[in-house]
Figure 1: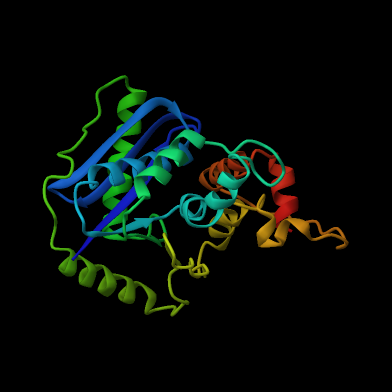
Figure 2: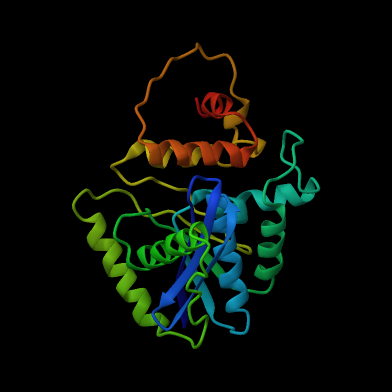
Length: 261
């Protein structure tokens, strides 16, 4: 049996009042936040709280997450960061180290799989987690106590939930028939390569900024290309997401864009 959950974070102003939430079903969810934090911190905190809440079960855990930064941090880059003493390949400190170390410890001995889903696209578990994370951030903005939820009260019908999620994702892909969703498994399995869905390309491409500090990707070492000028019109939300991804790597927005090219 598999416990299927979604984890999500939210930040108003990024940084600003932030929230986190994980959601399995209406009887099993939790949310929280802080008066000041980033979206990435909320995303990581949601995963950490989910792992802690379900630590007493031996069931496999499938985590739907719309942040490639979180998935890649946990399944791709963390081993290298640990080998370098929690330093990036450029020698700079890894951001959000305390949360990442907590996740690393909470994953030990667990069977956990991470599955990327597109945010704000109608995925039922992701939408439920996003709604609760955003509500928590708004509560902190208004200096109110957020609704924290019942926590993990019982194991859900994982098989039925998985079947429903698979049916939903198949229906969502049918009109445009993009490639399979990216999944990443912890422990010994290798993470699958991500293939973005069609539509809103820029918002998804901005996620590729995450982890460009890792020399193993090969992207950060390209040299000798002729300069190319690119102008892109961004919404305020897209700009905030892109800025957050650049901040996560500890570089300027211009440098992050240059690395992407």
